[in-house]
Length: 180
Figure (cartoon, rainbow, N blue to C red):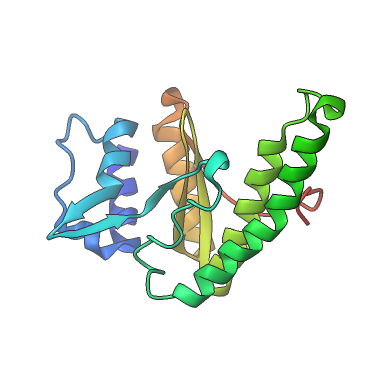
């Protein structure tokens, strides 16, 4: 029953989704149908609200293609430049000393944290919040910063998709962050 509230809230956050028919009733409770529905092509225009995270291609983080921010080219270029200026030295250092650091150090976790911190800072300045969807694949979602609605959405989502190993959470930078 939570799926109805989940779809309803997503349509409030993303009015373009009102034009898109919901998945068939028997499929609405399945995570893969929700994920597909969130990234839709309508009238020659693509709406990708759910952005895949790829730590290996950290500048391909979907920010420039996001429907809300496509017009903010200068700001997005600044965010991308900040991500690159923070990530490149870490990657170069790791490559240089990988033999000494060893395979137990997860440089990709540090890069992911940089990406999320920078996207979070940008979204916060635009009065948006950053939601993370964790599962087999990792995604981020920018939603209007409405704490009560976000909390309710996350609770409903996590209850609904508990058995699919797909979780959602509101991102908050860690005080113990590598990237701060």
